[in-house]
Image 1 (cartoon, rainbow, N blue to C red):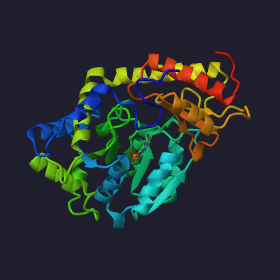
Image 2: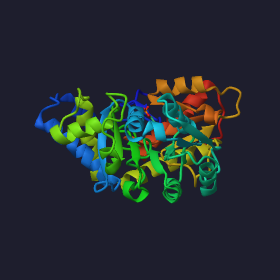
Image 3: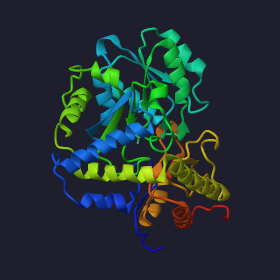
Image 4: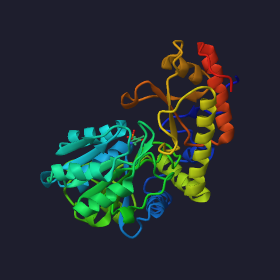
Length: 372
Ligand SMILES: *Cc1c(COP(=O)(O)O)cnc(C)c1O
């Protein structure tokens, strides 16, 4: 196969970025220029708009990957001395939330659940009843470690009934799946620019409830992760506290424009069509998915390794990489699997190329598949 025009990042992010977004990064911007401030403000407003947070929440971007936003949210919004965080985990990224909260010296209780069945009301209630000291609940929306979409509305109901605060890692899902910050009454929603918003990595975005943000002045022990200070500075000066990744901001402003033009539902439908094509195609070739279709978040598909002894992920990966397609290993939480993401600048015609590359790669490493 000829070398493809683009490198396909078929991963949980960063993704194959549209050329129009990359082109935005060719221009330099001063962080204090009105144009840069306008881009920052448009991004912040748009992120609130798509999660119905305009009246209740604020969107605060900070420099770094999405995880920086999670830690900043914890330091700023959670009173360390009086709080205990219940992390509901059913996969790798849930485990990472627990790791971040523990590493940042919070008191943490982990509710470890299997990948399936999905967490139930009874699971969460039991954990809260067993440990009345819990004040906050943290959970992933799309758990990209397995591909499960967690029932955040149910968790929000339980949290509200028990008077607990809720923080959601919507890093993988934001922009591809509806989430309602006001209806969930979420303390914080953590967002990435480089998943369903299809832009480049380099900033984290936190949608935080405004009353909680207002009450958080001076709380963060980390200066650079102080969301309140970043928020106040942005509100007052329109700029970032320290050097922002200016090209990344420009790219994300374009990413938001493109997201608005396509619409969340159309974007979700495009991903679903990609995912359907990929899953059907690989099933025809004898592969099995880790999850039943009804539960899978159609942004990434997790497949069980083929039983053929010639199969080995590293050789498969290398054969795909040579053809311009980057795939992803399974996580330890889902051993014996590999993952293929369908987010980013991809449509069904790209999925045809992906399937062709898979056929060639498996043939190259000597893995027999059922003829498609
Ligand atoms: C990709 C992803 C993250 C990644 O965070 P980074 O700090 O940007 O690497 C976190 N949570 C979930 C669910 C993800 O899919």
